[in-house]
Structure formats: C-alpha cells, structure tokens
Length: 80
Image 1 (cartoon, rainbow, N blue to C red):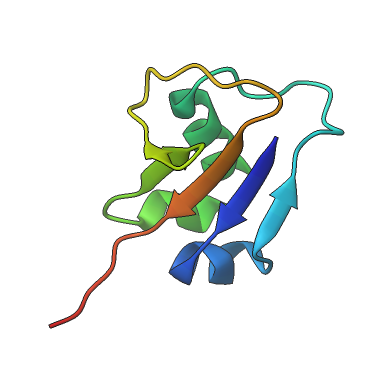
Image 2: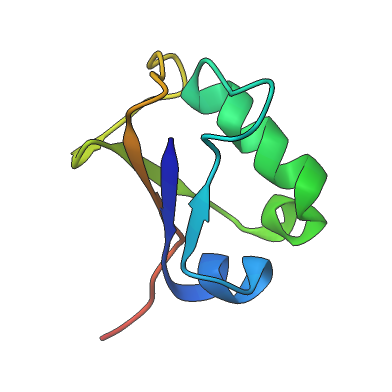
C-alpha cells in the first residue's frame, strides 16, 4: 500500500511517498487510514478537510482498502 502526499499533507509528513507495505497492520478502510494518519501525524487533525483517492478515484470513508492500492492524500486547496 503506497500513500502519495500532496500540498500541506506532504509538509506535515515530510515526504511525498509513504510505503505501508511493511507494516504489520494495514488500514482496511479509508476511515481507518485517516485515523492512522491523525495518530501518527497530529497536524492532520487540524486540516479542515482531506480528500482521499484510491487507485485514482475519490473514495468515501467506507471504501475498503487492499494492500496493493495506491492512495493519494489530497489536502484542501485554495486559489482564485
């Protein structure tokens, strides 16, 4: 399971890619992944919103994750 991080999510973690493949306990849903990120990186809980894409498709919290998924962490963006 590979996490791709963008914008402030990348700044919070300090890198643009995290490989979770070697973890003993992988998150099984998008909601569980969000909890894992907030526990490991408390600044994630300060974000007003956070979009998750699984295999290039936006995913709700109830989407089930697989060990081979590519997951993008997309923080809120601003612009004009």
